[in-house]
Image (cartoon, rainbow, N blue to C red):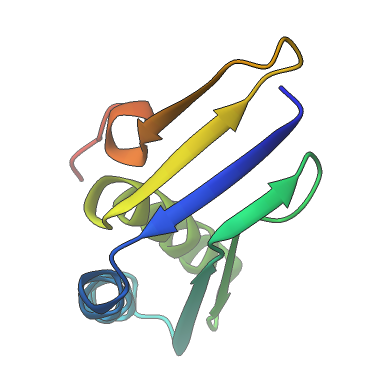
Length: 104
């Protein structure tokens, strides 16, 4: 793979993303949580997703980060296009490329 490209349905992604953030704050009793998912063209090594959590205890922070990234991948309308060295490319809905959801 030589690069990635992300597209998303911004209005829905923001609304659903805000819901996921609220859920994480309540579920893991963290102080605050933020997440940014980039769209557009990204080169290999560029950051696609950033998640940050503030909590009194690191265990809660780590659990909240894991929850955020997993839920964002499952619930946000964001699609990834992979570009390969051979010239091929293909769109992948991030929901289909995410790891199986673990209910807790």
